[in-house]
Length: 159
Image 1 (cartoon, rainbow, N blue to C red):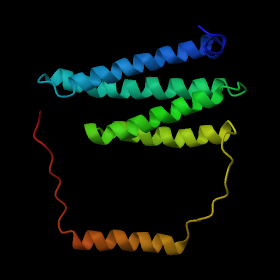
Image 2: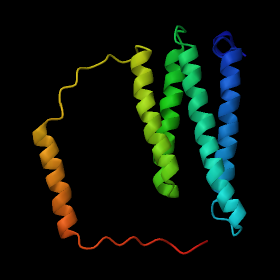
Image 3: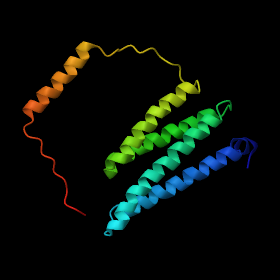
Image 4: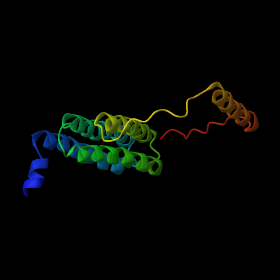
């Protein structure tokens, strides 16, 4: 390996990236078993989805936080944000709400990470929620609830 590459892959980063590789393996297994005929495999794919989220996002987040004084922390933060965006993109195509929630939480923690590592400056909140916005939002909800008709929840039959 070159000096720059070996300087990046220290012992802590290798440990974090090994957890990420485990998470990617869980993600591949989840994708392979989610449409299986076996009910047990379909249920296991939901557990694998959660394990993949936890392994990938927590390992990358902890890795970036542990290397906050390292000049290569931008790579760690970009890996984390990229993984969160990957989950956001993958979730609608696979119809996985847990993956969507994990991706949204990952984006929230990613914005915290970028501010905490001083990679992005903290901006003042310009649009404060006020009573006019609250009334407008509730008015929209009431209007759509009144005009939409009865709420029909069409749940699929048991697997």
